[in-house]
Image (tube, rainbow, N blue to C red; front, side, top):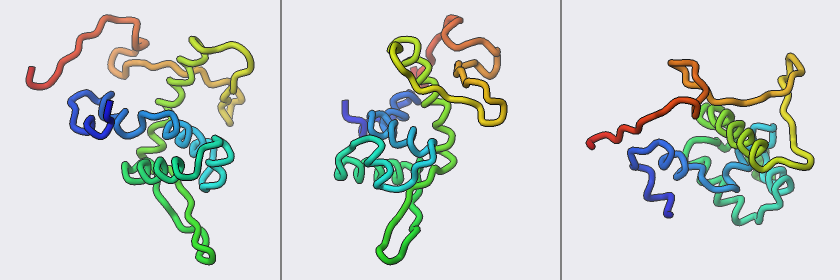
Length: 146
């Protein structure tokens, strides 16, 4: 599957995968939400090859999930900060994590806690209109033009 060809698909899932559908991009976004901003921090956290990290950071920046900001002139150094679109991706990461906890659990797993209440965050996807948990009610798919 060539993700570059999916930018104009009517399916929002396909369009989203075209932007952030590989493991490295998702892990970069995970780490950015954890507060990492610098190239070396990402590289150390993930053990990713520098050339791969450079490509993924450039793609996430081009797609508007990250923005580059220079933090040093001598030597020139840049950091990567989440944009509004990048911040809006956090629930997606939590839902992937919830699926992994349920279906790929076992052993030690990272936990996430609300900083104000101290309670563990347990993500679920809920339909905003009905309040129903997604996956508990039948659905139908409408493709524009069909």
